[in-house]
Length: 403
View 1: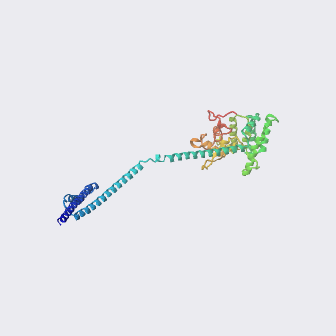
View 2: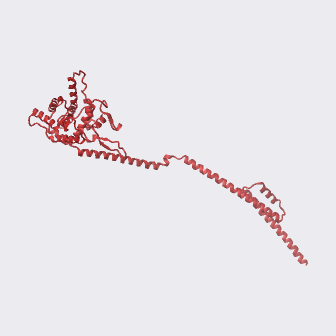
View 3: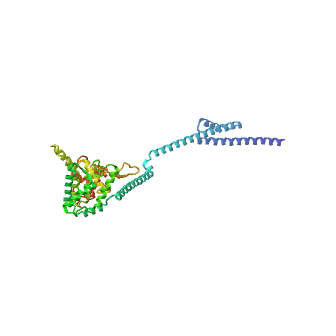
C-alpha cells in the first residue's frame, strides 16, 4: 500500500511538472506571437497590454491561456486587415502616379512627329495626283492641237509655196488692186462683194500691169479657204444681208489674197491694216460730201475691225494652231481647252492672260482704237502669232522678219 501511495504521489508530481512545462511552452509561443505583432504594423495599446500580461504571467491556468490566445487571434486579424488596407492604399497611389506620368507624356507629344508617316504618304499621294492632273491637261491640249492641224485647210508649207509661186505679185500690184476696189466698190458704198467679182477685178488689174500671162499661180489654194468660209457662213446662216448670199466682206477677201502676196512681214501687216481702214475712208467721204468740217479721227482701226481681221486670219489658216487654244471653265478633274475666237484672241493679246505665268498685254491700251504699232504687237503676240512671228525674237517691239 505504501508502494501504491508512492506511485500515486509520483504520478501527481509528474502531472504538475508536465502542466508547468505545458504552461511555459504556451507562454513562450504567445510571447513569440506578440513579438511578431509590431512587424504587422499593429503597435496599439491593446497589443501592448496583452504583451505585458503575458510577461507578468507566472502561473496561469488553462482558461487564462485560452483567453489570452483568443485576444491574440483578434489582434492578429486586425493587424492583417490594416496591412491589407495599407497595401491597397499604396497600390492606388502607384496607379494614380502612373496615370499622371502617362498624361504628362501625352501632353508632351508632337503632332507632326507622331503622324510623320501619314504626312509623308499624304504628300506623296498629293504629288501623284497633281502630276496626273497636269499630264491629262497637257494631253488634252496636245490632242486639240493635233485635231486643228489635221483639219487645217492649208499647211504652212503650202502657204510658202503659194507665195514663192507668185514672186511677181509685189506691193505695186497690190496697191493697184486696192485702188481699183476703192473706185469700183467703196466709192459706191459697198464693203462686200462676191468671190467671182473680186477675182475678176484682180485678174483685170494684173493683166493691165504685166500682160495676159500674169495671174495668180496655185490659185486653187486660195479658192479652198474662200469656199470653206462660204460654206461655214451658209451653215450658220450669217451670210451678208445686202445683195447675194455669197457676198463676203472686203476685209476677208483681201486677207485671202494676202496669202499670195510676196512681200516682207512688215509690208503684209501694213496692207492688212490699211484694208481695215477702207470702210473708214468711205465714212469720211460721206461726211465730206455732207459738208462736215470736223477733223477726221478715223485714222486708227477700231477694236471691232481688229477683231474681225484676226478672225479672217484665223479662217485663212494664217495663225499658229497652238496660239488659238484657250482654256475652258472646266478645271475639274483637269483643265480642258477649246479653239478661241478672233475677239477672244485679240482681248487676250491686249489685256494679257494667265497672271505671272501667262502673258502681259502688248498694247498701250487694253480697249479702244488700235494703231499700226499696236497691230504689229498683236500679230506678234503669243495669243495670235500670225505666220509664226511669236517664235522670232526681236529687239524692237515692232520689228518683224522679212521672210
